Image (cartoon, rainbow over all chains, first blue to last red; front, side, top):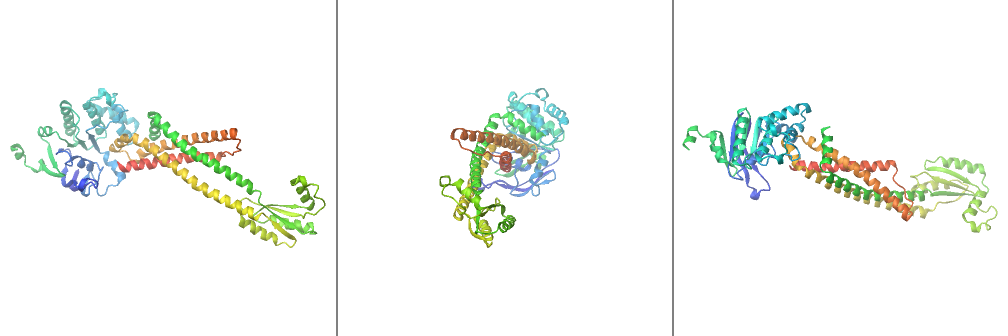
Length: 233
Length: 282
């Protein structure tokens, strides 16, 4: 479903031409939950950007649901993005739209019929537990609530994979737990999740697969380690 | 439909920025318009002078009027010729008296030759064509002499060519400045909404969908800017008329429409370039 094959990414303007990613190979199966961890600059965000094809690999191939980074045309990328849900640390909401307006926006821009929008929006807001704040503007919501609106926006098109870049990075511990619980529920409903995070506690407290990056290379993938050794560790 | 709504919302959401871009477009088009007005008036003035380009073929004394009339009919059929007038000796005298009033009593008797006055069609008044017609007219046996102000026509055409070249060069420069200013203005509008654009892309909006409202917005701004520029140019002309007593011509309806259409195209192109660049970069 998601496959990185010997992916190397070099930003031409980066200092010294260092590779942001080097020879990275991994896959995410349908319905899987995967953490991406590692220090800042390890390449987590680069992996996510390659996944939603905001970037193309310098070498190697990224395959996402039938789209290949080698063949995909620029005009086909919107089609891919409609199958993904993308979440950021900074929520990226439109300040002049209400919660439901923000969620509806994702439907409007892909040409969803107007009559179908209210239902989908209210379902998505209910799913993230914000039905009662549908009419609130982002500035009237707490950080955790704003992130929930972003989740509702990401989920409203029924993505097959949710890509989250430090979704709890701006949130306090309580809100973090709430968002993580929401991610679990989303995953339990069948959506794959690829989440980049600094929060090792979150990673340790869960049973999900974890890929650790350092200097653009995968240094650890719990999928490669027998379950028993994890427990010893 | 959604695009038009989005475009109109953009006006509502940032009225100040919209007003600023419309005014900027208007002023750059106004400069272009003023220049156009000057060019138009110079052209009109030159055209009026050009209308006076005339070939006068003097007819030998004693030529039969039938012969002259037949020649006039023939000459009138040349493709370059607008009309041919036969001026008899009496008419030549009357004209001389009128044109040189204070010497009217000097003129007596039929000492002035009769002539064929040939006027040329517009577009055939350049020195080369005039000479060609002159040579043909000279071919008639009874034509004594042909006058057509050779020097004068040559100079008029030199002036016209210089004015034309300067007009095109300045016009292009003004248009380029207008395009750059309009492009920069619309770029501000694009940047003001770059966050919205990046979110649109993340949720899978196509480039076309993102671009469309900006193109509509740009065209509307261009049209409004064009209309405002037209109004400013008109007011400027009225001021010139009133205080400096310049008799100036204004753009006719076709040129005025062209100006507004030009504004719309500038707005459209400026938006297309700005949004295109922005989309390629993010």
